[in-house]
Image (cartoon, rainbow, N blue to C red; front, top):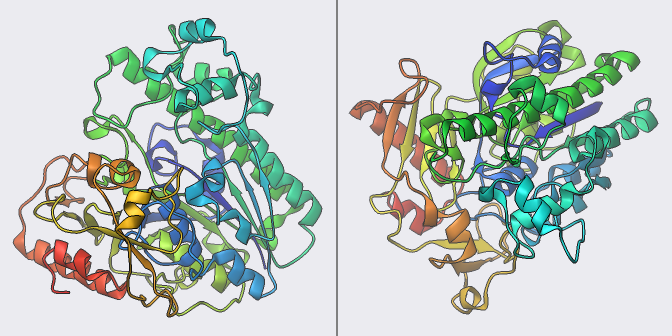
Length: 503
């Protein structure tokens, strides 16, 4: 068996023509014609690295841990495949893998390519930056003269990106094609092509920007804040147009991969899976981005396409049953005939792919320290504690790193040895308090979460999730699902208590 897994970042499902009318993404249309399109696929743990931990382990991680590395006791998809004799290769520009909070993921593959320069990747070194020129070129909301700042690195990196071929997304897909050129005749491998695009900043070739938004006057403004929409109508349109341009550029790169599949008839012997880690808000609900607000459909309901040679008769069709991100790990193991670890809580999509029934009745997802969200496909319930800031909140880990730093000595002084959980294979872990004001609390915990009241939405009558509904019976039913999923994932006692469940 041979498999190509393509993982985009922050790809809004409604930016793709197979999922939305009035959108032009021809490569995704080509993909939909050669694959099964999943209509109700949802995220698991949020955001980026928690989603990747779910992808590796096949289980939800957000009950125990915020953003962080793979743990020594974690099952990892590429390692499970390696144990079954499957070669794995990662081609990526996702620079979070090389930060403190993600540095154990790429090492699990047999080999990997890393393309530099995305977002604030500390790549291009300029000791004396051209600040005067930069100040004229960039919008004040994404300009900084502070060395090491996010915007500082972005402006610096763009100095080395003059054309399409210089952009990391282009080079990432080129690296994937190199692997295929060398290895497509061999058997038993997984290639993961993973690009940071269309994650902000929405950098795309000028031709793509002009094609979707016209010639936009004024300074570069392609990086929305994680905040309420406060920009002028012109600025809002600039941000949205740059996102559309980035998606268009991603569509081109996917098309180049599909060209290779066509030229070498890989459709006959190679599986292809295309998805994303989560979506992104582009002004819907008066919000940009993610993390601060409810995990609305634009964030949580994500695209998934799967082609399998043995299910080619289903190419061009759609699958309406519920699935979610943790199902991909057991699916890939199943496709390659590898054993699935007992700790996995996801379910293989292979039966559904072959047309043999549904996968799950519910999908549960969320952020560490935030609400726990559940959908049954008809309703979505965002369940929050009465007081999100009250009660104890701990991270359970033996890898104490935040996104870009170690845990502070203040955090570690208060740490204790906690219990072993059912997925830690008998290993006791550190129980580290999440201190208000810490980086994790501030960026990926409850510190900046604005929406924090439990609400129920009826997706059938209100797909835009504009007006919450009152339905006590459905709330009770979905609350029971949340409790069941917490217990199935051996959630810590204090997490159960935060939501009113007995420990």
